[in-house]
Image 1 (spheres, one colour):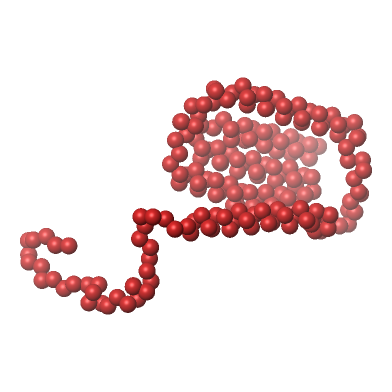
Image 2: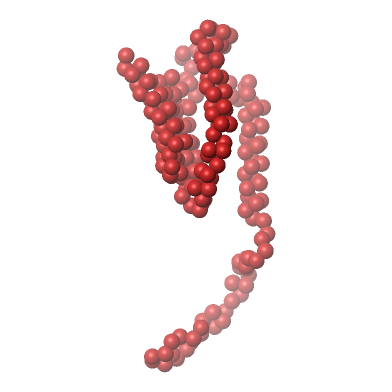
Length: 201
């Protein structure tokens, strides 16, 4: 009985925080609601016995991705009023997309209840830990897909580094050799400053 109560509690909080992520006017508040949704989703994963995915949600998504979103939103000077100006323009298309997604979820639930989904799944040994079973499937059956995902992330990381270190016009780069060769008498100047007068630069 307590498991059912906790499940509905976490599920309600996930749906409510997900809705507040979209409806919040302040983008910082949206990211905070998103973090709350991740925490409650981790609670649902714990109820399912997927401890690894639950910790992954907290460590990776809350500890890295959501915090990165929060810093980016707080540091960028984005005109969110201009972004919300086209809300009414795209409302019909967004409503249609939401209805399509809702229909897909309903069809998936009905197909699951009929027993046609998951009947051919391989039985899971209860003596095998969750992380071991996940690693076995990931590094055997889905090895090439896993490696391809890592390759895509590597290319994205290299592209970000290249874009960061590209040569830009109008900048004065640091010249370490000139700084090392500089003598102390070239860096400072002794001036007998008269009283009551300003400093000449």
